[in-house]
Length: 204
Ligand SMILES: [Fe+2]
Image 1: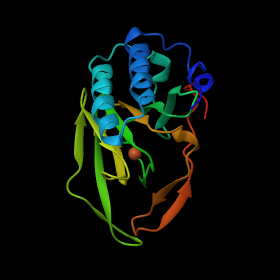
Image 2: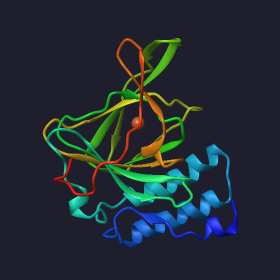
Image 3: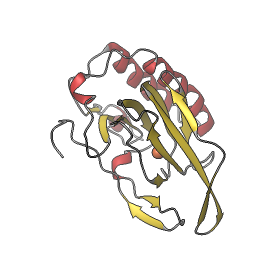
Image 4: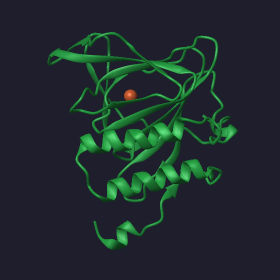
């Protein structure tokens, strides 16, 4: 990467996110990734940064934390100008969850509010997925990781059937434009690109 690329301003997705806790988190990630560390160090040190971010639930603007009745929201909080990482708030309405999916890049998940379950899956054949252990319950303040090297296929859902939950995700790419896969229960693969939700809660 050239010096010119490194000096590009970051693409904050929403200018309302000005809390020092969040801007310090982004600065910490940028400093870490500028050293081009190997993935284990990204997950360890990035995980510590994310744990500091979600240790307090007082920085996410309220309009970004509103759930939708029909589907969970993937609200972009920050997209790195060089495409090295993206930070996304997953806003789960009561009982909402994802299909089985992969990421293709490293990811960190920090629970900000409420709780969620992540059920990992593993392949036993080219088109055969089975649950890999028991669901992991993530409580507010806790951090988990995914990646092709440590387990990349899972299904996530709000642990609460009667209230919202919010987790903060960091990925090693501009995840909304990454070609990825969803999987049906029978293991069949379906290509998808997640995109991002509107930062305006009332829009589709
Ligand atoms: Fe995921």
